[in-house]
Length: 341
Ligand code: MRU
Image 1 (cartoon, rainbow, N blue to C red):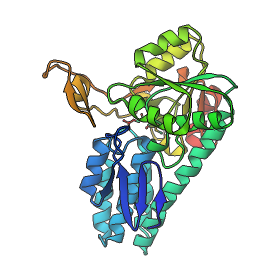
Image 2 (image 1 turned 120 degrees about the vertical axis):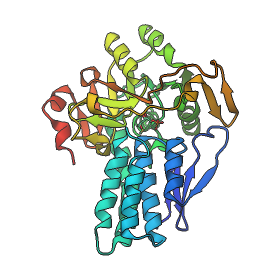
Image 3 (image 1 turned 90 degrees about the vertical axis):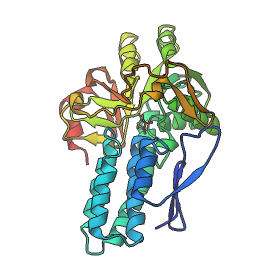
Image 4 (image 1 turned 180 degrees about the horizontal axis):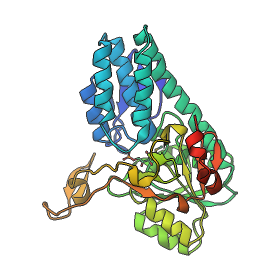
């Protein structure tokens, strides 16, 4: 396997390493990953996370197992095990489908390795294209807002929504970014804040419930979020809290964009009601776990509801920023998302 270098996934000397995102921003620890069981754990614990990143990490692990001499039949079973690691991000399923096709080749080891490498480098390019299309929408001096983490940690490249913000910043547009902390797992507070700091993007961290007030005061000009799955009609799933932002944006007449590569589009899913939503453990809401250890502020047995994602209806979206360009409501209503390749 080639040496590949991303912010959260890398291969070196034929080994796969994952940056443990649960320890960020305070510790940077690269974990070797060699087995399917380890990869499933890393994905379920959100040590590797973000829709494109989990698909690429799972594919690279399969390629690694192929190089280790696993049989084609074993690799096919492993692909099915990896597919079930998390249910919402369709990138995982889409990437594993590519790997299964590669495994059908006579020379399946070389073909699987080439396929996983291609998925990595393709994502770098897709991120760059999305960043260019999205940054073109941003006007100088705008105050932007984002949710969760959609940057280099969540992809192989510059990211989706955060890639747009990053490029607008690098283009000298003098933007400011409001970063939602993103309860319960604080991907904004821990990860997006860390990436902004590394990149010199001017940002301020806010609690999720502060966004409404900022919008009412005219301090948010444009919102960019990522997605884990976009249905054929344009409804999309993203980190829980995205839907409330979209409702607020509509009320305050603020443009609201979803930024995602075509690998996040599920043309077989007719609308948002059909997107499977991951339910996660109660302790994530009762308290928090991180490099600081575990704290619990709720009663230890407090009943909890903890969906990891919510669905934003297409009617609340101003534009779908894809690697191929920006689709508006009319294009999506005419079926443009079902014709992507
Ligand atoms: O649970 P997570 O942290 O994997 O959720 C991630 C998100 O919701 C992101 O917004 C989405 O995957 C797009 S990342 C480019």
